[in-house]
Image (cartoon, rainbow, N blue to C red; front, side, top):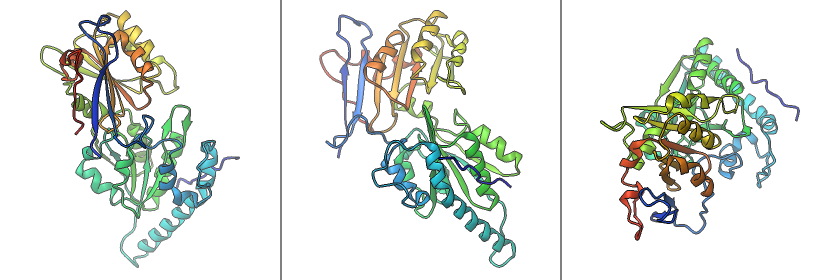
Length: 371
């Protein structure tokens, strides 16, 4: 049986479009910047609907596992080792409670006990209305939910208030839990009969490491059920009005990751085969390596004026979009200081969006409602 053994040493929404470039620079394909913001004066552009490393909401949500060992200011210098150390006692207590409950059930005093199930649940790109009914039913019956950074706060509000939530998110330079530790947690609680849910943004099997978790748990005799979610590519493409495939324009679509397992730039070797003008490219987690990827795509034959889009915090009220030509995309997202999560679309289908700059006049702003 796996053990938890990690003990470190220490009101209405407004949408506006403004032209980013002077008309004389991009006469035929001007860049367009689209900003979805909350009207509240208390909301800044840095606000995120997702769970963040130092989010006050995140610590409040996980308060049970800290047992007030963190002060109310939630200082930003907490590292993952420190967090795990103070979480460990409560995790062990919960594990012991569930173990005793299972032993009691096995004795026949109150039903039948046994090994629990693990559900890998996709929560979609952020908008809680895009959550599937099946996912909602599962998360409302969970005993313990392990959730990622890209699960939106609005989705987490739908969780059964009696359930235990534990943050296991990852961001650049900060992993609250290693993948191996996440495996161990899932296994430990499933083995004592808990109904365990692993919440992931988008779809669990699209750049979500769902396959790794399935493989590990199944090797240890744990039944895993996958509840699919709307992956960011589909959800955000629908938001843009971009068909990922379109007869006579794009006959295929490719999902690419912008970084490697080691955090380097080695995935960029795919550029040679991905530089297909008749295909649509969707790049996940590609902010840091986008300049190099764009350069390589152009070097391998993709036209510099290929339509492209970057979407930050897609499908949420804080959504921001840049539409421009491929060669200019890295500079535009740098200028606008886009942050993760940002999804990149590259291909001729992007120009089919009603938001594409040609659909907007230079003299007026286009108003696009965020549904």
